[in-house]
Length: 112
Length: 112
View 1 (cartoon, chains in turn green, blue):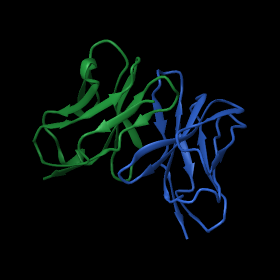
View 2 (cartoon, rainbow over the protein chains, first blue to last red):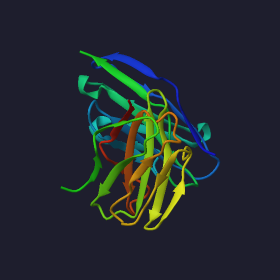
View 3 (cartoon, rainbow over the protein chains, first blue to last red):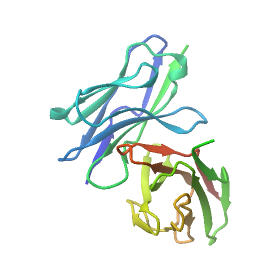
View 4 (cartoon, one colour):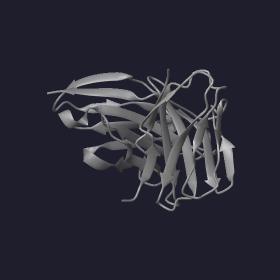
């Protein structure tokens, strides 16, 4: 069975700080990897995805993530965060079975 | 306006009562999913359906039931057998585009 581990449950940063949220997964086969974001009061929405090819993927709002196969990791990064990035962030994996397996989420608070 | 509509937004259940959460999509997607979100737990898969008149149990199907009589509709019933139903329920659908799931706004279920 696949699983996803997000290292930080709560992160507090100041505006303009750099962000890196850790995500590790366990699954021996080919995976599709996702980061979803849930802004306060809004739908869960896709931030970025990795299916194949270039392991550095870019998403919306200046986010990027790097797939490192040897480390089973898919960390999310942003060089300079804004107050509007305050949200909950979920890493998810699609392995052999249908449906996504999500991590427990990281609650990010950006202080102005 | 295309998308996934979940209703109601808030729902209250009495002890011993079955309640049904609605999920409708007009994206012409074949696959639909139900997830449960608890604080600090991320999203967990309850049931999914890849095609009309077929559905499969996810990781936490006990105490829930679904039907898929129409492509656009995938209602979830929370039965009296579900002893801890208080949670945020999210419906998602997926088209052919490489395992990307799109989410509704969710239904928050509470027990009276």
